[in-house]
Image (cartoon, rainbow, N blue to C red; front, side, top):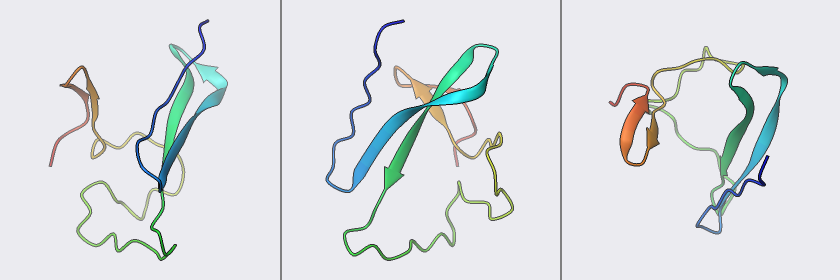
Length: 78
């Protein structure tokens, strides 16, 4: 398998590839993207379409979208 690159453009944004363990069918890695405010204060997630406080572990959530080459391939847009 070729090496993977994840490019994040911003001083308070970073990401990495994380192995799925155990691997799922057709999924052995996921990309994790992290955001941080310059003063490290918490985000106010009130009204955030993708936020659901009942989701406390990794799960499918159709309020997060995935685009491939500009085309929506998963999730529901707000």
